[in-house]
Image 1 (cartoon, rainbow, N blue to C red):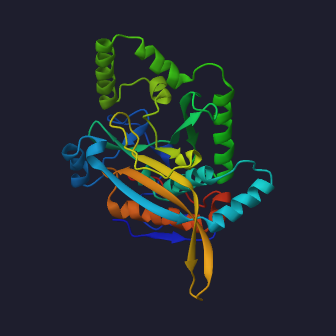
Image 2 (cartoon, helix red, strand yellow):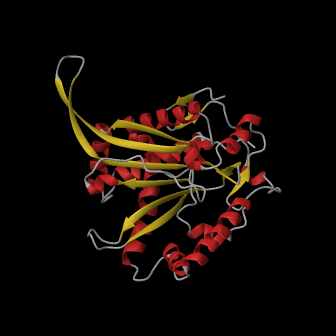
Image 3 (spheres, rainbow, N blue to C red):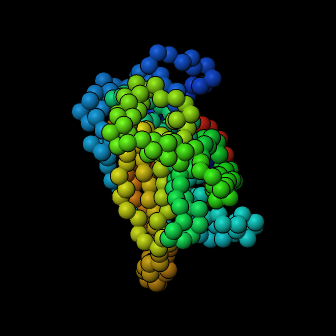
Length: 314
């Protein structure tokens, strides 16, 4: 299926796996959802898998890797000196994930209603605290990106959304929905959630509710390094459409012996991935993770948009 990836100085580009077609020419068909289109050309076995593993927690795979960030850390320091205050590992990982989708768009698929869909956009979800204190409230944000976004676009969009949340006095849409539901008695709340699950199964949820939901998106990420602990394998949610959960820790030092016998100081960041295996196969995920690893070694690639964006199969 996947034949590999080619790397050049301007971007990471796939050879062949997906069909490169203009999405503007695609006409919505019966079976498509508001947030994505049904993948009709997948092999029969791929379509059959969601019936064997009907929930995400039936189908989640876990993967951990320590990425060397020596070159990345140096480049981020240069960018902060150049005026990008606070730019860090979080912005880089999100930018790398987006770049990976631009060349391997199957990563942006989701499974719901036991069918596999290609998402129309890239939505990243994360939890933020309004202040760094034990009693500060938490909320979730969802930021929409384009496959052509660079690390500078990610930096700007993330900061705009985070600043909006931290400076707002009222609730955001996610909190408003949760607060409204929790006012109901428990038996009514359970009934309402059953109705929402059925509506989500068939793609009947209102777009406003999908936009507010922290359970619908391309990926959810958490920076546990800011809490000074190591990353965990965080479960993915059965409700909604999120196929990937990423957790990463703080930078750590490792003293290693190079090929010349010298002791050198390397910096690493530990990342944990929990992924829905029904969207793509292990080979596809491996190619994606190899691309992420390459971007850690060559972070300057993310400072320019990709030379090509590939669309998913139909």
